[in-house]
Each structure stands twice: as structure tokens, then as C-alpha cells.
Image (cartoon, rainbow, N blue to C red):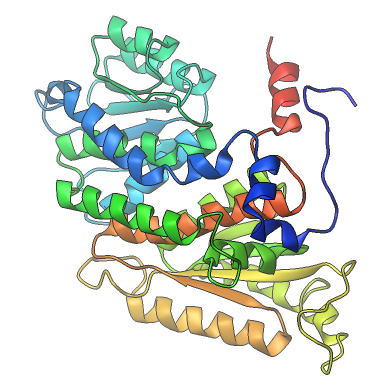
Length: 397
């Protein structure tokens, strides 16, 4: 097998491995669990680094016409987070952009936030160069002493250094907080220090609940991972905020555990994808299962759907939204009932917290850990993904 690490692991998960801290450490040599547990610390560190950056330069020219967040992968998710935290009351469009350069309409009236954990992403670099060339205001977020910092310095634009302590997919919060604080400086989002502190505390608390030494029956991430093992996960969010968390879970399940996954908004699913519950991996295969059999003893070779429903919980009742909260809640109840009728098992995670940012964190933390535990149960190193390395080698000129 060509490649730097090769492909290794097992088809069927070893559930006992998850309750052995020593075995977990042995199978996680890169420390992905440790990096995942650093999310709360990332919020605090990035907030401090953003406070040291000269973001006041953004204010001089007033409110922009639009804000473009340029990045790919985890960096691209920061734009989704900003858009959902800003919400429908945001006074200007917030547009995540995952291609090279910037949209053709971007000009001097706009702001471009270029994000790259490594500081050398071609998409972020091209966006920063294009923003400078067109006279748009630029903010750059990435690794210190990187190519992205050089572009920002040439453009005399604010640069927020994010030390590269973890892989990009484990650095979501380190990249997101600077984007939010830059948007706050522009008057686009209300995120105060208390929101950041509560979000960091929430992430710390969930990291403690999901720690490797906590056994599966009390560890929500291990329980979720074991429930997903051998399935085709479907992850739906009941609201725009929950949908961002659902898509994030899809990212980590694919990259860490190498699982195919369907993600999206529950509203969209109700227009078509909910039919998956009736299909050959859903109701049809579940209908063939012996109703008297132990639900924990399933045919290891039968692939089934497993639904994960992320619910916002109706905690944002004062905000305007495209979908009334009552509609979101009824829709979530309906899809749970549909899954139950068809025998498709469903895990539900409900948001907690007072601010949009904290609620988002409460929907992301446990799934982030679950994706790592699922990888480890299959004997996969969640840090080393040979296909990613080979993809970069093959596509690099």
C-alpha cells in the first residue's frame, strides 16, 4: 500500500477497548482525544489573542456592505458559525466562501475574513490576495509566521495568530472565536465576554463528562459512538443553529472515523430525505429483524441507519427566525415518531445554555468526542488519515 501510514483497522468495533484508558492511549498516539478536550482552552486563548490584534482598524470605514469568510474544511465552518450566531437580525449578509479567491462582486465596501489553521491554505491565501487587490478590508486568522500573515502584513490588515497546537479539524474553536470577535468589532454580532466564558466552561464540562476514564454507561460520547458503530449515520438539525452542529458532526465522523454520513437541516429532510427511513437500510431491514431478539445483538453484517437528531430546544424564543420555533419542535417530534415506527434507532441531543454560542457548543462537544471514540473502537488512528495525505500529495503541483 502506498502512502505514509497505510490503511489499518478492523471492520467490526471492539467495544471493550473504549473502557480501557491504556488501550485508548495506545490507539491514539497523536493525542486526538487530548486535542478535542482542549476546546474550552481554545476559546480562552483565541479571545486573548484577538484582543491583542488591532481590530479597531475595521471600524474606521463604518459598517461593511457584506462580510465574506473565506476558508475550506474546518476553517470554512467558522463562516457557518458566524452566520448562525449573528442570526436573521444581522444587518449585513454573512457569506461563507469555500473556493479560491472571492466572489466577483467583492469590492472596497466589503470585508473579507481569510481563515486557515496552517496559514497556507490556497483558498484562504487567494482570498486574502484578492481582497487586498480589490481594496476590501481584510482580516486574516491563522498560524503565526505563515504565508497568510505575510499577506496580511503587506495589506496592512489585522492578523490574529492562532498557534497550531492541534490538527485543523480539532481547532474549530481556536479559529471561530477570532472570526466572531472581528464581526463584533464591525457591530454585526453580540458576543460578550460572559458568553465566551460560559461557552468555554460548557466545553470544559463536556470534556470532563467525555473523558477516557469515564466508562461507557456514564460517558455520553462513548455511548453515542457505540450506538453508531456499524451504521450509516443520519444527522439532522432542527434549527439553523443545530444544522451547523449537524454538519460539523458529519465532518468529524468522516475525517476521524471514516464513516459515510448524511447531514442537513430537518426542514430540508422533510421534503425528501426523510424517505431514507423507509429504505433498504431503514424500515425494510428493520422490518426483517426478530422482534423477540435482544436489541443489542444485531447481525454485524447488516448495515442499518442510525438517526442522530440535534434539537435547539426552543431556547431562542426572542429571536426572529425563518422557521417558527413551534414548527421546528413539531417537526423534530414527528421525525422521532417516524423513526420509532420503522424501528430506526434515534439519538437525541438537545442544546443547553443561554447564548447562541453556548448552545452551539453544547451540540458539538459530545459528537466531537464520539467521532474519535468510534475511530478508536475500529482500531483507526483518528489523527493519521492516509487518504488526506495522499490527496494533498497528488493534487500539489
